[in-house]
Length: 203
Image 1 (cartoon, rainbow, N blue to C red):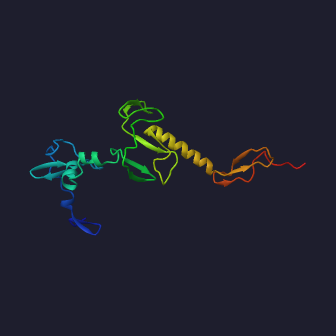
Image 2: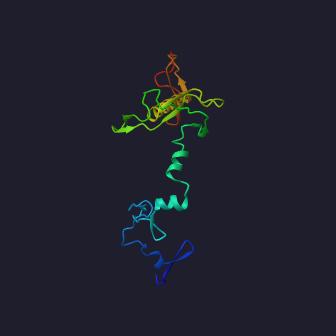
Image 3: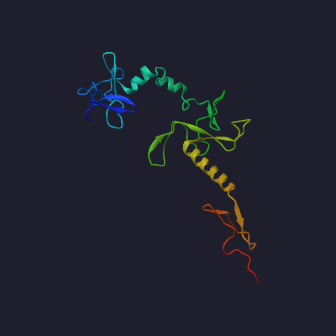
């Protein structure tokens, strides 16, 4: 290109401005707030540092100091849904209860919050929280037919109930010979009209 500029999305951008090096290149910036030498790294490998007063700050400190100063660690710990034990998720809605529905113990395996256990990957981890599992939903009483489970037991029970509901919705076809044998009505999306080997034979 003979011109010293290129057009990107109907905007004229100077080649000098596009290819210029960051101001902090050649030095090792240190965040003037947290004191760390690490910051956010883009997909292309470049680091993101921000000018702040007479020094530099990392991308995380810019977010908590300039962009959203209220979003501190204490603020998240106080108002986060994971830390608020009075929150109940009911049909993808967050309900704020007057009392704590959790006691901190799984009713199936007996694990308690804060105890160590071996997970499915064979690693020793600490149980951080419990979930309220709904056996059946009641709009008038969200806490009815509920049990307190750990995360692993909650996933197992949810999968088991989904499998039961799926089996209930499956349509079956009965045999023609009268022995009572059944099979699913649809096989890979194709409707099955009879069962092989179970038809009425003509004498």
